[in-house]
Image (cartoon, protein in one colour):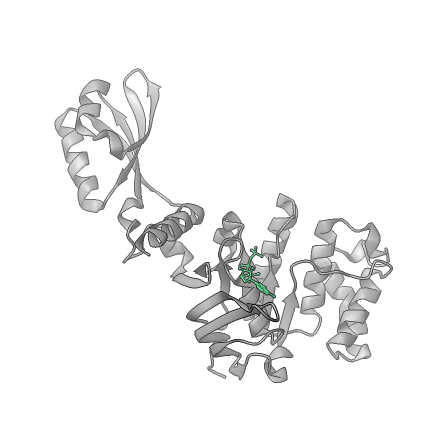
Length: 327
Ligand SMILES: Nc1ncnc2c1ncn2[C@@H]1O[C@H](COP(=O)(O)OP(=O)(O)OP(=O)(O)O)[C@@H](O)[C@H]1O
């Protein structure tokens, strides 16, 4: 015990294509970070960022080129770590003739779960993921959401310690997504670790404790989601752009506008003839204090002031864009 759930150090993967004219593609470049036990951790990145490559290395499906990767303290691919993982691949292809019940038998046997344990667990598990009533229907009649829930059930069947989920809510409707979030929160409550890979950032923001941002194979940042969305991230070129403040003001519009530089105003909404809701983007708290004082001097009443949260998506775009410019 005591080891991180996942640990990678200077992890690199270069794919080599072609037999004769060998072309190299660097999918991961010296990536280092840790996922602690009991957290819900998201790996973010655009198309081709290296997310699937990362997961495949952890599971021992492909080999790393360089660096270190461990799962629950065991080298990636080691059966002792692998056995304690519940894996949901991006598009789980369940043989169409199976039912949820027989599919769990099939996957259970693939993971060496004893038949008696499968029989004991499959009913309650299918109830838990909301498939109890359809447990004996062939999966060819299942919707995408039902298949995804069956995928989660198969990942949970052997009661693993860590879940590795490739796009767990992709293609699901809002209700199904919120149900999946509920299952993941329950797993966390039971002390399990969840590592998921996604490009649906609104979803990640609601589920994850921390995220790592991969950009074309390079790790850009590892951060706590709450810190990102409250603008508390340091060392980032665009970070000082992240403080947004919403002010509800009463006063003379022309006089108030004179105080505020046009490039700080994101929205200016007229509520009544002399009251306004204004969203400003400011460098820091000192600037907020400065403009509040200036507005007061111009006769404004400030009837509301709130720091607006930044979405993970906005922060992600800033991080990826800012660091692309740096490089
Ligand atoms: N078997 C392979 N042979 C050669 N190149 C590959 C192979 N698999 C992936 N790549 C390349 O490695 C890079 C990372 O791919 P990967 O599938 O890991 O990205 P991803 O972040 O999962 O992308 P997506 O979100 O689009 O699924 C891409 O440039 C991809 O073309």
